[in-house]
Length: 218
Image 1 (tube, rainbow, N blue to C red):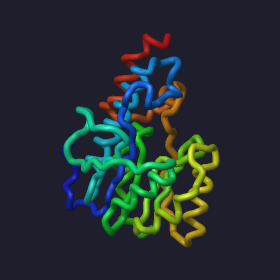
Image 2: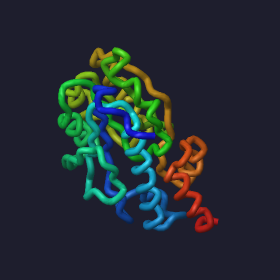
Image 3: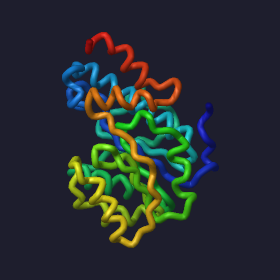
């Protein structure tokens, strides 16, 4: 399928990610996977995510990257560096890169994300969008007005079992109407990887990579 034309949507879609370098990404996959295998899975998940964003309607597509782009990066993305600081600071700073108009930020941990899950953002009249993760965090966060992000995100405790609850409450306390996206499972552990494969779309690089490593973990 060819990428959606730029005129098809007005939202900016941000993907916040780390360069898939062994020892720096998906360290909770080791063991059973080696650091090199964990990085291969991270690269496949990131690549699947980027291609899903390419097929979703968007006015602008931005990879907010900690690291250097590699051959896994398809054309069609601006690449901008992540800010320093904690994850809440980096997420808030990513929204500050946006023009006026709606913006949605997603991570690289949900290779089963599909263009359809992203298509309604900026079109359904909500002030914010929230995609909870099964581990208590969130996989997607969006704002009709990106300038509202900083006040809503900074100070939210990240990487805890209640991060998503706190983040969604901050949106509600700011008086924003919230469009809830489906709950997805992040890939952090080998059990997560095995579970999400069933939801990956046809042609998933993540599913293919995990299958190729199956013999390693037996």
